[in-house]
Amino acid sequence: MISTVQKTPGWRPWRRNQPSAPPRQSWLARWGEGLLNRFDRYLVGRTDQGLPRRLNRRCIFIVPTRFGLFFGLVLMLIIGGGLNFNNNSALLFGFLFVAVAWVSMHQTFNNLNSLTLVAAHADSTFAAEQLPVRLDFVTADRQPRSEISMAIASTRALLAVPASGEARVDCALTAERRGWMALPAIRVSTVWPFGLFYAWAYFRPQQRALVYPRPWTGRPALPEGEAGQAMARRRAGGEEFAGLRAYRAGDPPRRIAWKASARQEQLLVQQQEHPSAPDLLLDLQRTPGEHLEERLSRLCRWILMAEEGQRRYALRLGGTDIGPDSGPQHRERCLRALAVFGHPSAEPG
Image (tube, helix red, strand yellow):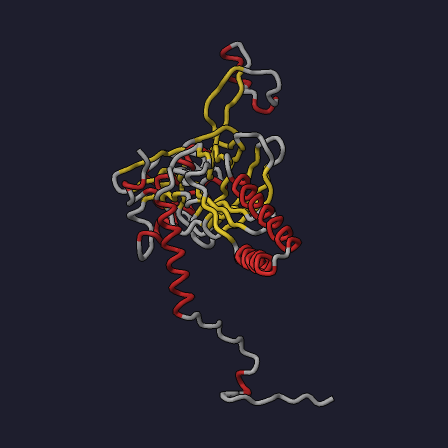
């Protein structure tokens, strides 16, 4: 079978496999979309902040869907025809579905009514990574809810509250830059049960999450030369003589100092140590990099590498010194200092 390609005006054979450009929106569609976006921003601005936040008739908005408008138009034609031709069956059929639409509107509204966001928790993360967010919902009337769509930034999730009246939603946001990241407004909407009406509302939690700098790609060498300013520590288990101590059960016989034990008339054991790795000094001013974010990124990677190697380290940012120390709490303090460095106004009061 021989297939043919029909040439159209502007046809180019070398562009046949290229993806087609997205269709351009008309000025009316762009104007309508911009109007809806401004209306949404207005609704978000007038939404009360803080948690817990309970939805009620003052903050739930409801409009007919496209299917609902078409359904209403059909009902108008049916009822109009029944009145014009005095057809009782058509009138009964039309008013029956008017009652169905009326009940559907109340059910759609009640699906969001009394829904309460009681808690929002966001963990810390690194820039350009996913920020985990946990949202806890309850219903004041302890009634189940179905098919509620939740949108926070570009994340979409489906919320269903069981008969217990409690539900938890775990989602993730993209952390674009370091510093404090405020949780965006949360939009909940529903078209349940018949899709005739669309109801929506907003939550505005005041919680914020801390975003650490993005770790440097790769594993740059630690600044060992800077550690000469710190004193070297020593730990047990090495090959250098560190003194004598009394014998304890379980000490190997080869470590018993026989001559010293004879003079002291008690068993003495040689205590041996070797120097541990010196402390690291991570100084922002001496960190290589073309700009501040690049140097903070390198410092972030050094902190993670020092923790992996169980090394003690100190962090110096301008006139602030942290450490030397190691461990999860010290790591958190250093990463927190990197995240808010240069943004004092971002630190919560």
